[in-house]
Image 1: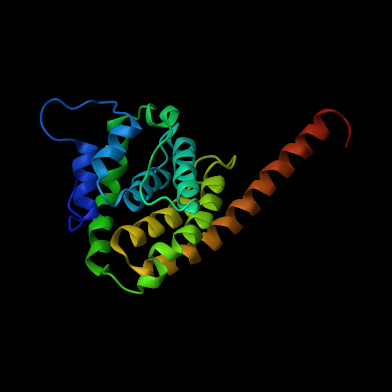
Image 2: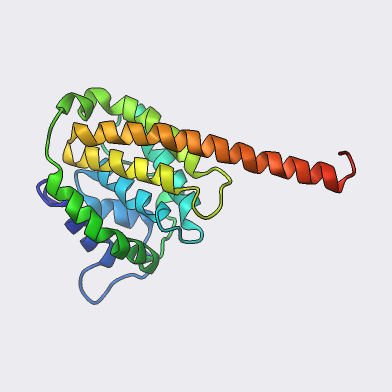
Length: 209
């Protein structure tokens, strides 16, 4: 169990990169969440929001599923994360996550310098279900059929909310909600454009247009 005072970047670094010589290159998701400690809701959101900023094949969809599970449990009022067995047994490449974290670590450590507990009413237990609803919308957005960069806007929103919950910073919660609005507008607009183009191509190919 990691102490609550530990920095998010240090916890993620230790969890992703591992310690010692006997490091499993493909740990399960349950292994990761067990290592995250008593801020697991927030840190899990940061951990599985990051891959959407630097998409690794196969990870964005999985990240959306994990964030959806976290969101559902928050909506149900749970105080700690309990993954379903089928998801907890899923394995993730430590190398892929480390590649993402290496790119994001500098920015994350800079952000931590300006974070502090504030506006507690926005990140306390009474706000948990609201965060759950917002995160469920973001999880659905992450699973939208948008290739390459489609997960970046919702990924940023997830990370901001995760940081807010982990550090009890209500200002970052507000930033996360604002980012969510932009992410949902972006996802809906782009999904509509993609589906519309598919329909147009289908109608053209079948001679119905």
